[in-house]
Length: 534
Image (cartoon, rainbow, N blue to C red; front, side):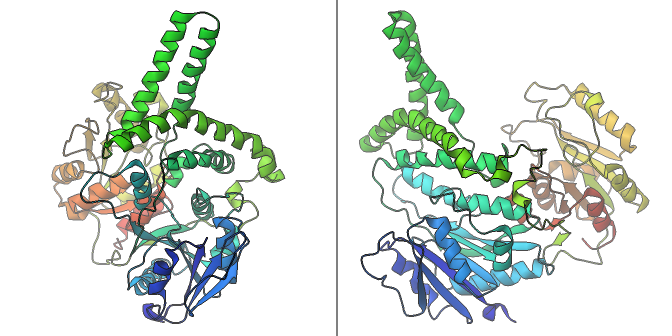
């Protein structure tokens, strides 16, 4: 079956926004057959039927929120792939054809079904004649978000396997990240396609950022379901709860001290509150248009957000007990399975090779390993040789590369030197311990610089890889770089070398999706590059 005839369904949940017409317009004759378009009416009490084109089927979900609406939509769909669009995006005229091509690529990447979803690219048009407002920048964050269902396609059988969207998330917030985490935790990969939709910024009043704080209650549920590291795994921005709590504490202390007659101490606490609030407001004002109205909005909302965000966090914690199932409430290690895999068929990921990367005429002459997280367990800024512990399979993997006749080296960022947290002597002592455990390496290339030093050696810059190739007397194109994060892959790509990503729990999902070759283990990665199929 060609890409142009690959079957898929398109599900568009809506609350009746006027923008729905622009979303649906390109989905008519432009959609390759067989294709169905399902509009899910999520209005609580529709006054009149939705006005939709004749090619669309309308189903209702009773106003239960976007998660429930999408579940109604995909369960009504009949195609093996289900693409979700929000009702405020504008697909271009060739979006259907681009989606079909993306799905064909996803299936070609992994004929065994390892790829479960394809994420579209979201473009947020911003004003060209001024800086964007806080609300506009918030919307523009969708361009970098992982798994945003503004344009996201899932295999229908995977949705059924992982249970679809969790309807305990009542808003258009975190329900897509939760599904993405459960999907990847079940052993599947999510890739990024080439299709693009526009996501215009919806009009919003000055209270938009205050309403957005309701999502803090959903963040509590995310933490309970996925653990403390869920933000990193989902590519979400770090939270500000700690800073908000400190601001509130200063404000409450000022009030309490003033009530107790301790006016000098109260003034100091009030100054701390004011400083924290001004700092927060300034960070939001600086990148914006700085008009009087925007500045006033930022000042007022920056004072209101800390207590409001904290209240919603408390509200989420108070409601958590009734939102969790008995299995989810059980402590880890006492009969509670990993939540993403509970009751589901967990898969062991296999080797993933993007099209065009298999080349039987190429063989590695040198294998360059990242150190922390690849050869040894990542201990941040480690200067203690006794703390060195090998990653699973590291000894066998390095030995396999040597047995195949490859030179072996290490390329490692060590910014702790620039930060003053390590000395070069300590780094060298740790490296010596690595050699005690794994045998001598033919080259060591270490970048001592920090992220702001603008050097040419710190990965993802190519300097370490180029220096290693020169030291070994081989061309960069004859080298394979094996690492655990996207910077390793990008450094190899910039130097003209091959690369294999071996993901760990700290590897971002977007880095996995962007890597050309992904291996489930270090030994499998080495087997791949020395077999001449990289």
